[in-house]
Image (tube, rainbow, N blue to C red; front, side):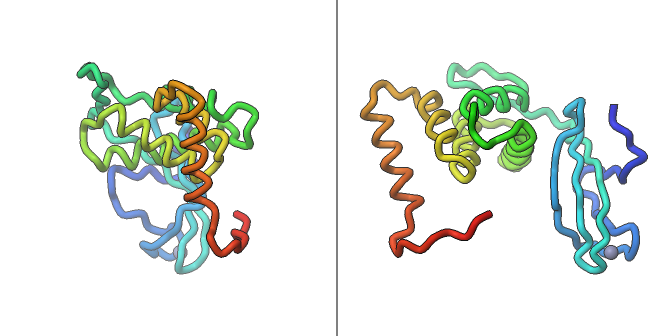
Length: 176
Ligand SMILES: [Zn+2]
């Protein structure tokens, strides 16, 4: 279970204040889920005084439902997304902690869409997240998600990826 003593619990969209200067503006350095998956632990840095502190947010109790293509509804399951990404990220520089963080971001983003999202939206959100992090994992996930039928599909997607990510000027991207 989560040790709540190590940080401040934040409920819903309540304003977070710095424990040192009460400043209301901070940036999130790191977000990850608690061991039981029910809360998000965030490391924050106060923009006013630089103090670092931790908050815990219980995920909203509002039901969040995924509608499958068949019309079947099921509760959103972050573990499922992580499992799907794990297969795509095998032997890639994407540790479990990174996948967990991606899944949290995806859930937060989709919850803004509504209490119900289509399974396609979930798939696209995963694709979008992977594309920005690892091209191989992205293509692997895309090959499953988009139900590629032959090598031509795969090549087309790979071509698309190259087009999108190769700068025309030939300038090198800054690391990070
Ligand atoms: Zn502060």
